[in-house]
Image 1 (tube, rainbow, N blue to C red):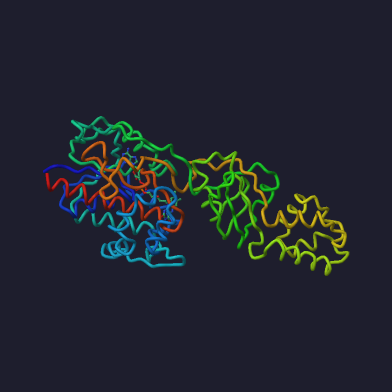
Image 2 (image 1 turned 90 degrees about the vertical axis):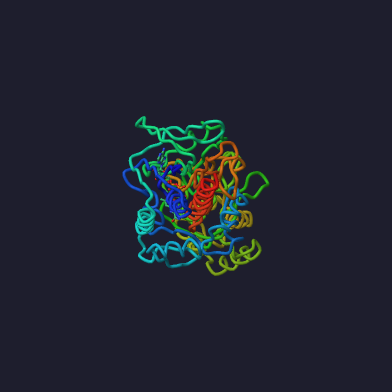
Length: 414
Ligand SMILES: Cc1cc2nc3c(=O)[nH]c(=O)nc-3n(C[C@H](O)[C@H](O)[C@H](O)COP(=O)(O)OP(=O)(O)OC[C@H]3O[C@@H](n4cnc5c(N)ncnc54)[C@H](O)[C@@H]3O)c2cc1C
């Protein structure tokens, strides 16, 4: 019987292997680690936010790169269908705030266990400690793989699901890029996404530990607005992190950082006029009390001092002596506080890798290569990435599903 090989036992590979076996293929799953699902295990802080039950349009809005490539995959395996499968395989789920789904047990390991049981039931051969180092192509068709050990395995279909390059200790070290590039595939350079942003500004680093809620972060490149969102963020010893900063990093990826500007609106609920009126009123109330006292009513203490310093206001001076230019500077900075950007934390610390195998070289319904017949790719290896909320895992599951199904059906037909 012809063999179908799946390379990588992460979210995409597990789903591809199970689906191919369900569609009648004789499948061998090759995983370089001593166990399956090492990255899955740490997702969602160990709880695994496995998908997001929002409407399809909203799902695609959360995909940062190449959302239209995913149209067929999301139709083939929508979030509800994924949750039904997990439940059927003994891993019921619960939907929490923001449509985020987690295993009811709150244990990411239960997702991997459900897949392992399913692989066993279907008779999939799982080979651990089996790192693939090359693909063989004969007459434009995949013909097998070579393992790092030197062993070769013949195959008439291969699904590459090796992930990106973030968190390399989980086994995702970018091997798939070299495997696909060796077959002529173009690779968009990998870049960190969903990663903390760094700043060299002393005032930013001095605010380490301060978290802000209900602020608006805006990222621009020249006149182009790359990202704008209301939410939470956190100052760190390196720069900024938290949901807003992580999302901004995904839109920053691929843009020249030196030309991008990041600004923070500390009072998104107030217009400049309303804020000016509020400060005028506060000055009247504060009288000869210090500016520091007035500013404490507007921002958290440490931020108040930083903003005063940036606005060139002596925090010890009486509020009543605040000059008009100083007040205007305060308003400007409150509505658009520039956070100097120096870069991002390294790709190894990124939640996902942006970039990867160019999607135009793959059929979006089947994930089959347009260059090599019988070769498929799925998951983070592809140049698709999304924001937090369960979207990235769902992309891996859905593309793995399409690849597994198509590869098995193509085999059955030949
Ligand atoms: C800390 C953290 C938390 C996250 N939390 C979430 C979350 O809650 N929700 C969400 O949607 N996303 C989350 N993500 C993102 C999500 O984990 C990934 O997008 C997803 O795991 C990608 O799946 P994948 O199967 O494509 O790749 P991976 O999960 O990276 O799996 C690739 C597999 O291939 C194996 N492999 C690599 N090279 C070879 C080779 N040469 N031969 C054999 N095997 C190989 C690897 O060992 C690995 O097991 C998180 C990521 C991180 C780092």
